[in-house]
Length: 245
Image 1: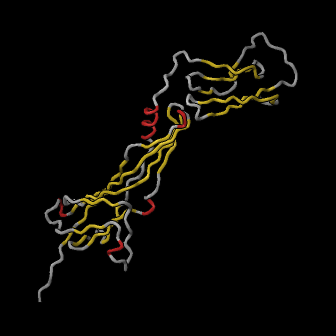
Image 2: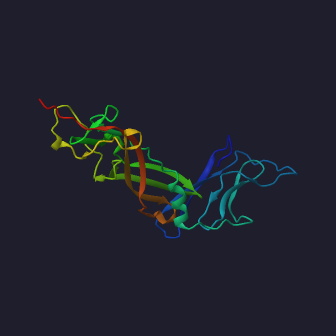
Image 3: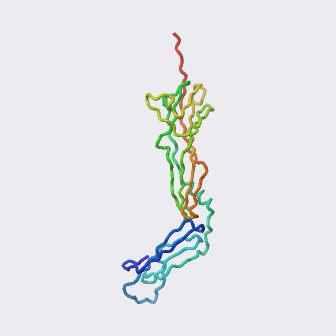
């Protein structure tokens, strides 16, 4: 790091690789040169004049300058209590907590607020914008970890003991659409009269497939366990009474 008002005489690139030699970073160290030799003062001493670069072995590289801010050398320093290098699984596990996809928003047709009907297919779907890959990047113990989660299935528990699984978000209902166009639907056979508060609790649980990549740790990447998010609504289900004439 050059001192203010002092030109850089040259620079040195220092390549830092992981143990696996799969990922390297290059640090550029500028070597400033003073315009005129300056007289040292009796209390002059060396000072750290740049950031500490954490190395894979737990040591630090740091630039050292003299009393006037002129670059002297780069030192490799070992902390008095070296921090053990965490296992890769611990780094990834800590990063997973930062990924938090939102809960899904449930839609039905007929609308669940006005009430569903027995013997009539109920269309089920989530907002189309919800069906995308979510990702976040965090720094854990000095390593950059990117976690991604892509939705794959939705399990619908219908509140009466039945459940169905749909491979996508479902098809939004549009006036004039035939029921055959729905990619996720369910037909109630009995009303919700005997259910709690006279309504069925409908729960949608989205399962995401997770994956990760790292900067450092050998540029490791791989799959993660399943991540789920759920939402629920309550809907009355009525039985249409036939009229005998």
